[in-house]
Length: 556
Image (tube, rainbow, N blue to C red; front, side, top):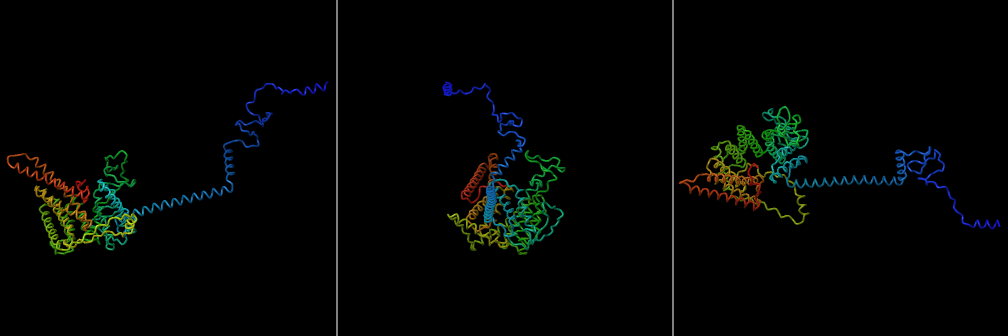
């Protein structure tokens, strides 16, 4: 019976034990016993806080990170990283070298193209040529864009070129130095001393380029005498804006420009006389080069109201031109140098109100030029230079022609001492137009308005006809081309100004019983002359003979 009840009891389903109701724990307990050394950390880390284990801290985290990185950078990985790093360094160095070589090649190619367009003397070094071209580009770019040229910037480039040309360690080897009269009257400005040069041992190309630098620097210096150079900022400022004891009331500059201090400033550009005296009292230069520099110096002296010194310079230039012929100077032996010297002297006499002395010189020169022109007509006219061949359709062929063309600095083909009969007829016509223009100005200023307008009109039409021949490559030199275009612009400007003044004067006269019809006829003829001028301008511009800037008023 007991066995049966026990078997029945075991067969019944066993009920799970029922524990007393308690709150479920909020966090797992690592140990059932709350021993002080077995407390769970507060940062929910499963790691217990034991005395023999390191405690969590920023320093320990950094060590842990370093150990993890050390585990990643195994021996094989370290070698791979070193290889890739070295490869990256070599790649950067190679790219840097290639980039600089390409830039240097492009710069060299550009300089070579510029050298083809504007050849420089072969003896000049690279930095000298760069400064010289920078001065030319600054002036040419602004002239083409009809913008005013910054004379200080141009003078600074020319000054850098001049210093290198006179440096015995650079381009001034075998260059002698001579003393100039009254040397103590001038000061040394930016390493430019008042000296003269002996260029007898230099080549013709070097001397021609040097004289070009002297004339360019002198012209820029004439317009920069009011400027000072701030050494601290390498900039030019008007001397009236310098702050210092010598200028208690400086002129105000724009708000974003800090005025210069007197202790930081020096004179910006040397005196033009210091520049021109290098050739005036120098040796080894051709007569034409010396005459050109004498005329430039005389023009500056006239501007400074030193008429006596200007007369002396014009006389010295005339003596240099006569020296090639001795005392046998007449109309048949008149040379381009003599013609230039006489014209400049007569122009100076006219500007100083000595009209009675200037007009005979102009008329004598005009007669000599016309005589030479009629004589040269029987002589064989020099063959005009052939027109340049049209560019090929192949760009590589055009590039090769430009690259492999020999660079030759253009020297004058004549010395200036040859008779006028040896000049091409277009060159003689340019001289004739220039003389007619001078005479027309003098006649108009002496109240002979009709005669002055007639001479000016003839000069302009003759210069316009010569300009067309120049455009067709008639063999003229660059100086003659510039003279011809200058005559066109000056003649057109004078013609227009004369017509405007005469029309205004005739319209302002009151009508009367006598002479009314004559005044109307004269007014009509004057207006017709203005219409003819407009036609001449349109024809020259339409044919592309001259640029529009030629007809701008002088001084703009």
